[in-house]
Length: 395
Image (cartoon, rainbow, N blue to C red; front, side, top):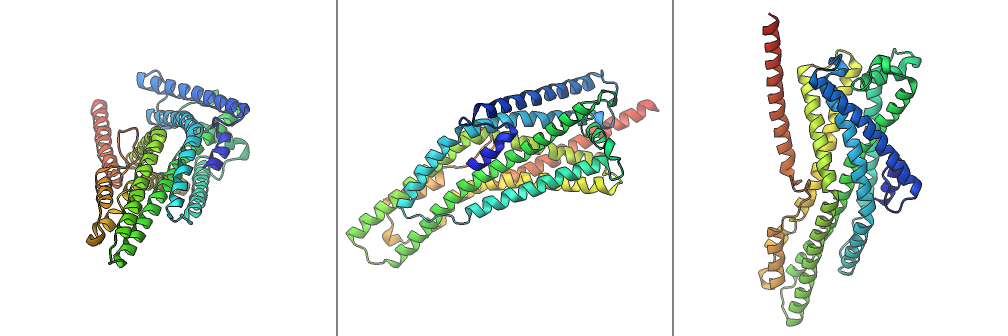
């Protein structure tokens, strides 16, 4: 994670330990993105108030609102990731203390965790670059002259912000860079959440594996003695304290990443609804490049959203995975500490949340799917109603 934050400085995410020039770069990037966001909001206001000269195609209200949402997400993402980077050392210190305590309790390490981290990072980089490059190619087309490539791309992707007569080469280069930064930040915030939740879930799996080992060993020990009772009480007390500290770690991390979870899920939910709405009401373009880009972009968005929710929901699932071992525990060696641990795991609800507005559990993915379908039906109904009223008036 520290290596991730180290490379994220190029995107304006400077932690508290970064040099002053990285912080200046981050503040400059926030300022420029904020200026673009203010311009995008002003374009939305003009379209809604009827002051805009054109509200069709890439200058429609939907396109303007989508552009304003993308750059708003970029500004908030830098601020929240900056806060996460600045406070991460405090989480690291707490994490290390717990890991050392777990080592003394002979809890095994997760040897596959780094491989998972590396695989997910490579997967995000490959899919993110492929989706963005496919978007550029679909906007520009294969028959566009190289001299007009940048102008055509900017006027299509940022038609909500610029008219053709307002374009110049410097605006084009600046918006090209800023759009890439905004897209990378959108992917980065999801990647950070996935990596953090993978680490939390891994620690729970290590605890659960240790509980399973202790339970299987105690099943073989049928002869009881006072010394064995004392040893088992001590062992289970240490296990229960480890689960208490793990729950405290999850809540500490949740206090830090809660705003980022809310931002990530809100942005992903909005663009999922937008993709479906445009695909249903306007249809997919006849050109094969735009069809491929639409399917690729929508698929990648759904995969990212699902990975964020499921990886975070895994923390909630793993927090109760030790209960079956405790329920099947040998009654001859059952003691008070096992009862306390059993009660603690059943009653203590451990899950990451978006600032308390929702909890990331497996049921949330189904709830989001149901909400997307509901919103799509409402939007399509309003869209068809407006279309019928327009036709009736014209007639």
